Image (cartoon, rainbow, N blue to C red; front, top):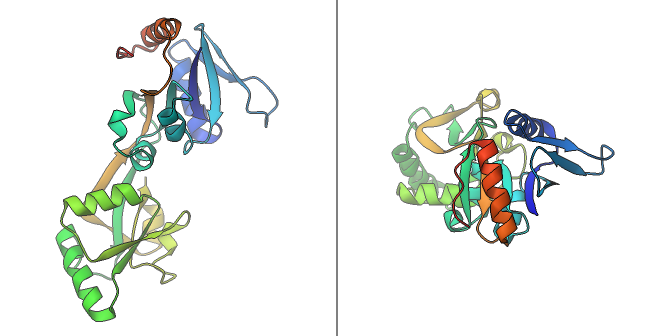
Length: 234
């Protein structure tokens, strides 16, 4: 039995159900609203597992689900060396958001990563500690800044209302997901011109660690045909 993990609520769940439904596979809730029970119609040998989007990368890496729908940003953030643990089967075309770096609008001389690097060095020399960047995407942000030679910063963990950390004086800059940029503008922040860290969207992933029996491989092939997705040999 192949297990597919999908987001358990909200627009990501609805859009995932729509995407599969448009390809002849019906994903549906099977119990009371809060039971998180679900069913799959249109293909045999598939079980639906409802999880939070943030749990799905972990479950894929552990092999407890065979397939999963979640944001490409979450997989890259939560799984070290992610491409060795999962395969991207198909981008689903929804859940779009950009992970970016933003600084106060008042920083009129800071528009690029080179500007940020210079500002960070000046900040440390003036204040005696490193410029703080609030984010929940530590791995992605650190790798991005390292690859662009930015130093003299520290990452401050922020699990919510990241845009408000600058106003609240707990950070000097932020790295966060944005779709419209409206919240950034409301908090007087601007995106650096060359600081797009990752363009995220919902993706159907395949787990390398899951137990793939011969029956599961046959089910995967049938599922791939239905979804018009090329599946690798497992």
